[in-house]
Length: 321
Ligand code: SF4
Image (cartoon, rainbow, N blue to C red; front, side):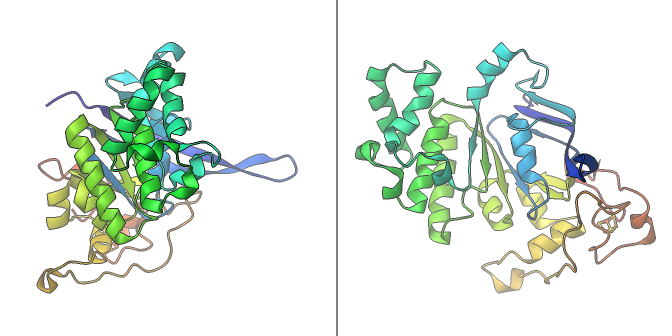
């Protein structure tokens, strides 16, 4: 096995909650609470969970868009929180983010070609003379046309704007793309086209993806391994096939039971979770899922289940497994 492209070890990210006249810290939101996983070069690792599970914070912490509280993040073997500023400047273009809504990050008065090309100029990766050719090629490889270079963001549909977002992320030839809910705002038919584009670009450019989504059916189509997060903790990690065939954690089972399947006899019995996701500044003791788990036992309310290998790289945190 290769050295992982990304290694996350015991990562924690807590956000302070301030209150009172003196604006004192009265609590912490434990957005990410001691999680570990690795992403191999060329793979697509899916991170799923409900809103508030901490999955987006993991992506942003890996890219150093927000600082960690504790733990270690390695990219190509280098500890991203210990490298020099110079080294970080060299590594930063190799990791790019794709947003759910690329429109909000595009200046409405800047032509799309210029918006994609500006990063290339900033990093000295192409001269002004070369920019047009490089950007036009990027547009075409993302399913747009070279004449789109001169158009403004408002002239594009949602799917086309996401193609622009992808082209812009690819401009600096990154190795890692963190895609945060990149298809959630799109119609189902357009979602399929964008997922196919992700796959095609991965084959042609050898990209590695961290694909963040609340939707298991989207992740199923693209990811080779999947991690399931709940309230800042990793509940289960397994290969896509293993997770869908043999989910071990009750939370994963509940999420999977809501995924539509094309063949009725393969339909899983629906598990409806009671209650809402608890407040992450005051998570339940023991297993964080115990307030909603249909299989809760007494031990679950007292002891945090260990995240351990249940065999063949299938990791799970549950007292029943
Ligand atoms: Fe449910 Fe207990 Fe397993 Fe948590 S540890 S998922 S509460 S059975």
